[in-house]
Length: 495
Length: 96
Image (spheres, rainbow over the protein chains, first blue to last red):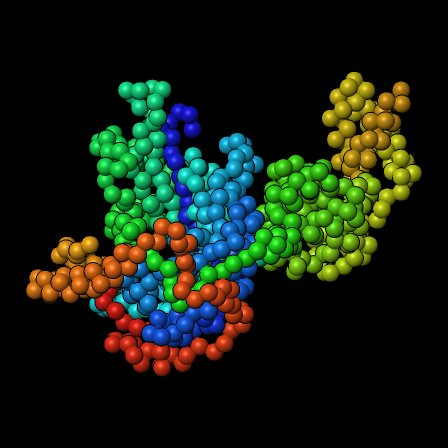
């Protein structure tokens, strides 16, 4: 980063749909993918006289998420109307929270297994509950003048999470999003599915440039740009890189500073890999917020908040630490395992406990289990080999009765044919080779290969490889590392 | 406080209402009277009064998270000025 002539400053605004069954203020279903306009009622389609009633579960989920983000939960919170006129917002206002949000002043810790930035805490300004709008669809191919409006999504609970502008590289922004998504998934408050719009990201970006006229003074801040339409975390990362470059170009031409021009909104164009200007953002006062008279405030005592806090369960950061401390695995490995979700971690823990070697279990889970899950697009619950059978296999690897590649063959057989370790080994014709049999075999090899023995005696231990090859030809079930060990041992005894 | 014609223009833009200069003039006077009427509240000294978030002294009115039937689509769309078989139709929404 230090080679850039500026510092990029990023704040993220994330909207996540909460995983309730019904909407925030009415009892219509939130199910994704239903036929258009089949999940609406007088409340969410904005009929006059309809009365919204708050979904208790949505509120509980929002508090869970806010607590996990280390936010303060005020005892008193209320609902406000944010007015704007848009076809997908039938009431002409969105029920949101303005001056007294349900949570604020939190933080999320992020780090990078690849060490591209130092571990840090990103401040959370606030997290508040609000309702989603509907969807407008415009079929440009059809060339019709109309847009079609589907109000199914209208009124779905959203948690808006606003970070401080404290991320200083696209990589930090991506790490924040990844950790946030993981946290919310562990809390089971959202499925965070970006394709279905359950998680949406807007980024506020500008540059801080050292002031050439006052080297010790505060840096020059360029105008803030809000970037929208980023449909994956990768898109966020790329859009931010693009936007930093673009703003640097603009600065060199225009020398416009923060406050010189109104805040600009730009949309990421995934195909062209550029951002494009959109309508200029309305002043926030244009939303003319005022308290919603249809909804009464929420009061939650410190005791009730504490009860929800006690039920948060083990969160990703604590779980990583526990895996590292209990099973002796590296941060990189605990990160890979924890990022796969709680079910996989539970599988790993059971395997590590049963085989007694956390590192070995971690290697096999990462290399063999995850590869298969990815290839077949299945979850760990559908993985054919249970931890107890897997541990039995790993015990044979630990004892040297199977080498890694033979172990893999046995595992594949266990998966394909649903066999036990013993049956899979029998089917593959793997017989455990008795150690005395192995010693005999190695002795015959030593006697037949004086030149190799001489090489080994001269200190060239690699020469033993040739003996392993010969041993495997005579008996494919021998353990190569045990053969190597024995051959070196016997060579040094031979004269 | 009095309302200016440019206030009315701004509010009409936010409400997506296209007003003629005559309408703006008439509405500036009419809306102005309403605002002045409400403004009487400002005469009361509220220095020592706690702010109130809601006129009713109720809190925590909840509903359980249980799905109930929505309205039939045809009924919902029956009030729309323009529709097709499954959606509301509105003038083209372009851009974001």
